[in-house]
Image (cartoon, rainbow, N blue to C red; front, side, top):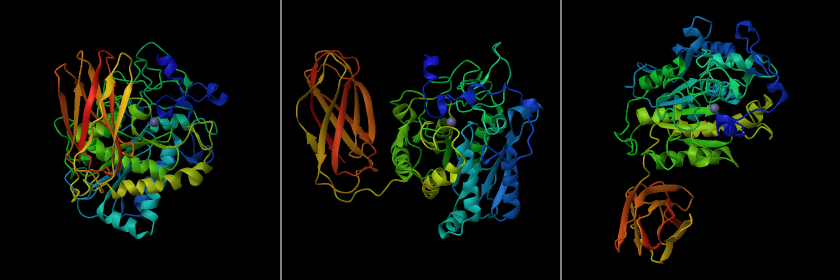
Amino acid sequence: MKGTRSRLALLCAAAVLVTTGTATAAPDDRTGFTTTADTYYGGYRTVSAHEQHLDQVAREHPDLATVVDYGDSWLKTQNRGGHDLRALCVTRRQPGDCALSPNTTKPRFFVMGQLHSRELTTGEIAWRWIDHLVGSTAPEIATLLDTTEFWIVPIANPDGVDNVQRGGDTPIPHRKNGNDTNLQGTTCGALSYDHHGVDLNRNTSSNWGLQNASERQCDQDYRGPAADSEPETRALEGLWRSLYRDRRATDPAQPAPTDTAGVVLSLHSYGNYSLFPWSGGATTRRVGNDAALRDLAQDFAELAGPGWKYGQAGQVLYSASGTTEDWVYDELGVASFVWEMGSAPEETCGGFFPAYSCQSGTFWPKALPMLMHAARNTAAPYSPVPEPTTPCATQVNDTDTPVVSRVPVTVTVGITVTACQGNARSASVVDVRFKNMTVTPIITLDLVAPDGTSYHLQERVVGTVPDNTYSFTLDLSRESRAGTWKLQVYNVMWLGTGDLDRWSLTM
Ligand SMILES: [Zn+2]
């Protein structure tokens, strides 16, 4: 199962580079690595160049930029070289700004690159984002610098990037951190799907050890011996705890308050996806702020252009557990996103190692509008749009529809709304009634908005009493009322027979 999955050519989580350069990469030899060059592979910046860049920006813009050391890489904790973990805070600094305290006034937009070290585009986008913030003369940037703190970690996994850049013009596809502790009596290779280290995006304590997080230390998605086992993981979590107030609800299925500020963005490649929690756990599970996150993720995908999809990882791609994106929402209630930058390897500018010219030609023109949209929404990513002032009568589909058969089918029953304009209410109600049920099946119900956004209502056991009516209240305030709404009914157990009697929508 795992072997099969590891050969799927999918985004950052399990992609395999099938190139001769990768397959014949030199055995791992970190101790022999030295470089004085600032770039490799046509222009990509080394770890050392990134470190110098942060220092230089802070030196040249003391009113705007501050370097923060937030921890040590694994190799540094072992006294084997390694790196400080470094972030840059950019804002027009007022007293108290950029403090490692969640009790500040400016909302914080956090961007992270190269948590997966081989995903070269992500560090480059972070570099350019820094330069744009301190160098742009656009009035909107000036306003944002007055009102917002920008936090950038261009290289979240510097030990891993050291391994990647060792390959020079044939970058080594190292994804994980530098931890080469031999826990399982196995010596790992230097291949995309077989190398040492812990996957830092499978190592957090949120949903740790569930789907697609290997227990084998050489696998590219090795989760580590325990949640939060790696210093890079713990350092990031500590940094986020010091930057964001804990606004989560007791139950993550309930929303964090609508005035929760802040956005955390983790850049990955590839696949052209705009993702948000949950990445781990049941794919039908939704965070309390699902509607707002889904809405912003859709915006990002539309800004990115054709071919981009948005959704939870398990909906549009596949699940991943122990991720940083889940941790940020799970522990703090903060809006959290992943962008998987770039198309498949066989396409132009695809894969982990696109030509450096793709950065100016393809990725930066795409990333900048997306970053700006995230920046504009950092103050209140969950803020609801105004409630509709014009009431809308309850819309009903009263057609009897057989929904329970002995085969697993999804029945879709639509309601087309034409008379109501504007957005739906934050407390919209869906009523669903079944009849003629012969046994007690398990039915899942999803509401699909006119724009295709799906809202999972709940798994319900539908009893055999004559009138089984179920009522669901949900936040549809991000949805335009006009158009065709669909109710999707799926009999999980494929047992019994019966009918959907009617369903209605009050919004
Ligand atoms: Zn990745």
